[in-house]
Image (tube, rainbow, N blue to C red; front, side, top):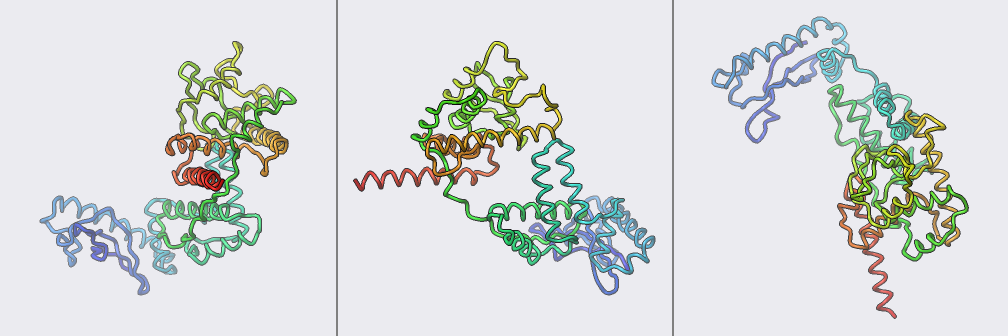
Length: 405
């Protein structure tokens, strides 16, 4: 087993610079350990494995390269018996880990650690989602070695998810995307060579049959009379969403008076789901709802829509808060479904349909796409563009209907 410094001329860039690697040959198989040095291709002395003196800082660079080569050779000598049983990639992997002073764990062990960090950081909803996806990946394969990950395995995982019958194309794609995240995290952490062609599954086309309420249906909803104070709160929450900035239900439930600037009519809140700060003006109709809810007794730390009750449970505990949000979201959606049936909607009304309604309504009234993206908390503008297509389609249909009469 030999280790020597080599210039990788096969990796030359546009400026004729090449990386210097430590080449290891074992049982006739060659592998390369990257160093931190790249030099001009004409500045390398291959025979003596040195940077020529005409290169700037040649002495310092050569000293650093010799230190790295010496470190590799010491590890090879110390673990010679272990390395002699491994192939080229395994030797490279072991060397990199020992140079870092750590041992590589299995793919699923590292995946467990990755998911647990969400719980430790208080992102319980994200933790539950990722944990569920990881469990499904483990159901597919009890053991995954990182070098097993290729296009064939990913396709098999896709077919496994589709065979369940409960996963729509977007759900399947989301679970494959999480698998890709785990894989890339593992390769990055352990400097493992990555197969970039493994996850070539195309993203499903965005749906254009998103359900939302039109102006007439919104008017019918507003005419409904709440049967209890709780239902009145629910109604105000929904009106605030469709007439305001399309907040997620988790942000509606956790909205406090300290997040609202009544004087300037703005909201400044960190999103419960994404962790990003939302700082925008609240439209007048939504601001009117806020003002009607505010009483002299309200303190900055009180909830604007007092559905959650921190006097009954410790909502500073992320897990308890997440459970409370899930529980109250279920009750809220049950109320909305009932309202939808009363006004004759052809779909089940829900908190998410409220966001759809806000987006289509805002865009049809001329609000800029980037603003709607920001208020909805979409990471990509492509997520928001689907609403613009829906609005355009609705306008075209209205024009066609008018012209046909």
